[in-house]
Image (cartoon, one colour):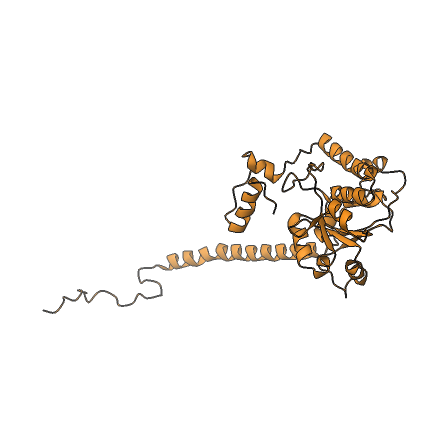
Length: 303
């Protein structure tokens, strides 16, 4: 039995005509045509408005950009003049025989609360040099290449292969004349150290200290991490055999933190402290490598 076909009466149209129906009167036609005029006018107004907005935006792009006004800075401590820290700096640069090279990550240069300018303001210009960059080679910096190849140059960077600075000085037949310190976050410093073969040429040393950082307005990974200024102060006092150097270099850092805390800043506890005490404000990372680092911090294992 064949399937029943759908019934269709002869009066059903096969295709609907696009023209007006026969029942439409001339008045209806005029009314329909008249209704299109306001719609066309509205579309034209919208197009004109869009063109005007585009022209206005183009005019804005052509306006000259005025640089933001920066507060006048002190020429010595590089702080705004109203919060100058020069009263806490030594009257004259400290007399030292050690040459200090600071390898600064470019991101640190623009930070307001950086410590390297305070460090440089305390030392003679010919004893403290700051080199900014992420990649260094013999072609790009022949001076630094020469320094790294000298047997009396040290680089301060913690790790399994790093010797304790004080113990190394007791055993080394050559007394160091130069020390290199990397300035940046821990991830930035790690990137600079491992991706520049020059920095693996000098003897690698580290500080063995139980003191906590006094740079309390910036978060540190662990309680044992020190700022660049604090590392330099400790290392120079050991190399120069003069504790007064460390006391003098720390004075402007203490003043900086005290001023910031008096004007609304809060003490930044280390990530290690926050994790151990259940105070870490962010969710634990899902990335396995980052999660492993967090676990090491909680267990007080050096990373």
